[in-house]
Image 1: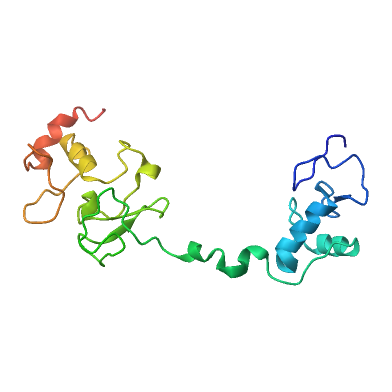
Image 2: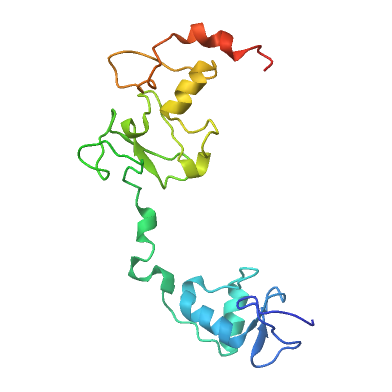
Length: 203
């Protein structure tokens, strides 16, 4: 058809099949330049080479091989030199604006105030409990990028104290533990004495 584009480079593929223009023999919807599909074959190798549109392998491999497309018998180029090895690793540093751990951002403990919690949404950011004023009972945490400031999802001391003041969340306020320190001028108050601030239950 007129204005058909190569599915790989998105440039015009021409209006008919030719030596330099090819179509997927399986779905007959994916058009591509010979040079584009040859480059894809060299990068993907025999193990991962398939139609970029319908993902067919059996018919696609046989037909393109018979039409002169060189398909090397090797692993794809993107798997060489452990290019994606870092994706298998777990994030292991504290990303709080100020890390309070004396041993540094890269160190953590199994439990307690220096346990490293990863963002429960992206797992690409982490924080020590104490560095973000998280209570010992907090089991999940979201970074600013995932939760956004002021959404109520990020379990920081500010959110906990504001929520407790409105009677929205239950926070254990105890002396002698490493629970979040109240902001200056605040004092320890039981949650039950704050419930009237929440207003009617319909709100």
